[in-house]
Length: 264
Length: 271
Image 1 (spheres, one colour):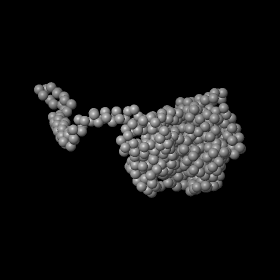
Image 2 (image 1 turned 90 degrees about the vertical axis):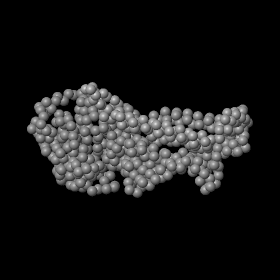
Image 3 (image 1 turned 90 degrees about the horizontal axis):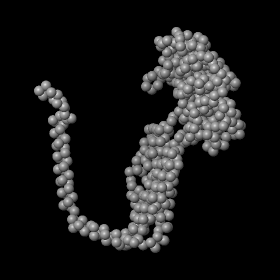
């Protein structure tokens, strides 16, 4: 479904953020990308939707080449990739509903979007998604009135309303408390299962990644150093990815308590 | 060195001898220069007139008081013109300043090499000339009247508004823009959804602030024939009708106080 071939990014400063990364993902796979800060995780997912232009290498989404696209062709392929951010990246001064509907901008003409005249089916879908992430009652609140967990739910709804085939998720839980982090991860993974979406999730928290995903890829200094299941993450692997440290406590199995009641 | 060792004791001073001397010399020459300048100004002043200044001021005040209240009926029109010059001038300048600001901001300019320097040049040119001088030029171009005033005010305000606005554009949060871009939005949609909401508070603040300044500036434009209450002020001064001048000054004061109050209220409501 998603294929990266020899993907390389060298910034103008000379920093090599990605070194010839090869990665193939089947449809519907949820993958966690782990690695220390500066390993190139953010650069990798931004190269997939061309927010960062790779220096060389290719990206294919469902067989279509993404790299090198411009203008309308690039916009059409971006519509099929939803993105979720660490700091939520909601437009703070717009309402929750406007933020969710902004996920449809790729499908709606300029004037309609300027006057907020979105097609009724988009509005219906926005309400359905807000209900699904538990924020229907917040639809008319301004985004900056929400808590961190609520904002991230809006971010998820905005990505999903694009009707994407792939989710690019950049540190979704790094700004959240441990409980909210789990709720958000669970929500993302559940929604991917419901809709058969593939997802790349950049994540610091190794234990959280192990708890929710089916495949883990380790990145170090821009190169892939690990690719396997969550149970293959043994201390030696973490030492390889992050460097020497006592890893036993980190990968100790955490109980998945059923706390889906809280509303973050 | 501020520290000297003397008889085994460490004596510490803030400055060493040389720094101390330099400071003393600077004070000395500064004082001498001040006294010399004082002398030059004093020689160039007709002290006879300064001595009679209290009488002259008293004379004007007694002639100016009481103000000629009946003259107010002739001022409603000009003060309305003045407010209109400021308001329309501000609106026109904002319409021109917005595109210039987007062209001047580093993160939105279409071209760093050509468009941005051009936009910055427009901003500097507009800011470097006082609105009274713009009015003087425009009166000879479009003729005397309100139009010259409106155009002068708008030209003068473009630079001010565009400069503050482009600084606001450069300070926006780029990840919000990135998020909108990632949805596959067109560049214009990215602007409307990603950038405009972020600069709206600054825009509103700049608009009322400039309107408030323009009320004050447009009261004097009439001095050079560009319409508004300054026209009456000028003719009253010419015929030495101090009781009319005092009334006009009171009306101007009143208008400025009102405009300050309005802009403070509006800015308070935005923030």
